[in-house]
Length: 426
Ligand code: ASP
Figure 1 (spheres, rainbow, N blue to C red):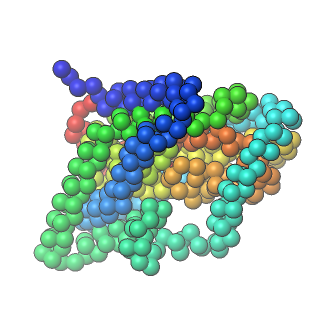
Figure 2 (cartoon, protein in one colour):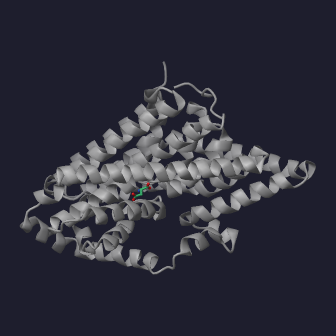
Figure 3 (spheres, rainbow, N blue to C red):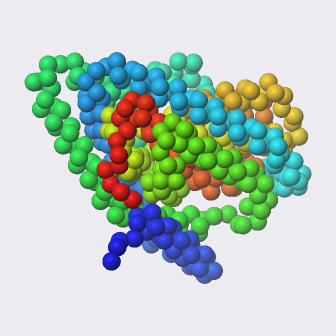
C-alpha cells in the first residue's frame, strides 16, 4: 500500500485535534484533560524542533559558506537576498494598506464593543507594551550591535539570538575558506558529517509531526476564546486573511516569473512546512523542515538554502508586516482617527523595520506592532482590540512568512545557477 503523503498525515492530525477539543469542550473535565494529557505532547514536539534549530544553523551555514569557496559569491548572494527580502516586505505592507483602506474594518466596530474589548484586554495589551518599550529605548545602532555576540555559547544558549549564531557561522565559514585547504579539510568534513546527522534528526522528528500537530491544535482550540469574539472582529480578520491570500498568490507568481517553475508544485512541496508553521506559529521552529523541503523537493542547493533560509526566518516576515499594516490602520479607524497619506507612508517604513525586528516566535509580531502604532500616533491601548483573535491570525501569517522565505531561496538559487532538479519526488 502506498504511504499517505506527509502533508495529508499532518492534515488528518490537525482535524482530529480540533475535533477532539470540540467534543471534550462539552465536558467540565475536558479542558483540564487536554491541558494535562494532550498538550504536553505538542510542547514536546515544538521543543524537539527548537532543539535542533541552533545546531542546524551552525552546521548548515558553516558547510554552505565554506562550500562557496569564493567570498565574492557570498557577498553577491547576500546583497541580492537582503534586497529581495526588503522588496517583498514593502510589497506586503502595501497590500495591507490598500486592502484596509478599501474594506475599512475599523468602521464596522460599534462603540460598545470597542469599550468592552478595551476593558477586557487592557492588561494583556499593557504587558506587550512593556516588552516593546524595552526594545524602543535602545539606540539607533543597537540592532547592529546585537548581531555580534560576545560569547558564542551564550548566543547559542538562547533561541532568540539566531542572528548572532548566523553571524558566527558565516564568520567561521569565511575563515575556513581562507586557511590552507589541507588544514581546512578535516574541519570541513566534520561539519559535513555533523550536518547530515542534524538533517537525519529532522527526518525522525517529522515522523512524529502528525501526532505533534494533533496535540497542538487540541490545546489551542480548547483554550480559544468564545466564538462570539470572532464574529465581532470578523471584518478585521477577513481583511488580514484576504491580504495574506493575495500575498500568497503573488509569491507563487514570483516563483513562476523568476524561475519558470510550476507554482502549484512549489506550494505542494512546501505544504508540510506550511502546516507546521500554522500549527506552531513559529517560523523559527519550522526552519528545519523548511530547509529540508526546499533542498530535497525543490532542488535548491545547500549553499543557498543554508544562507537564505535562516536569515529569512529571522528578518523576512511578509505576513507579519502585512498584518501590522492592517492592524495599525484598523485600530486608528476604530478610534475614529483619519490617517494622512504621510502617516500611512510612515507605516510602510516602520512596519518593514518592525517585521525585521520581530522574533520568529508566536505573538512576536504583536509586540513590534506597538512600535508601529507609536510611530503613527495611534493609541497603543488599541492593541486590546485585536488581542482576542491574534493567535489564529498569527498562525496564518506565519505560513506566509515561511512561504516568502522559501520563495526567495528558489529565486536566489536560480539567479546563482544553483537550482537543480528536486532530489526527491512528491
Ligand atoms: N509568529 C510569527 C513567525 O514566527 C511572527 C509573528 O508574526 O508574530 O513568523
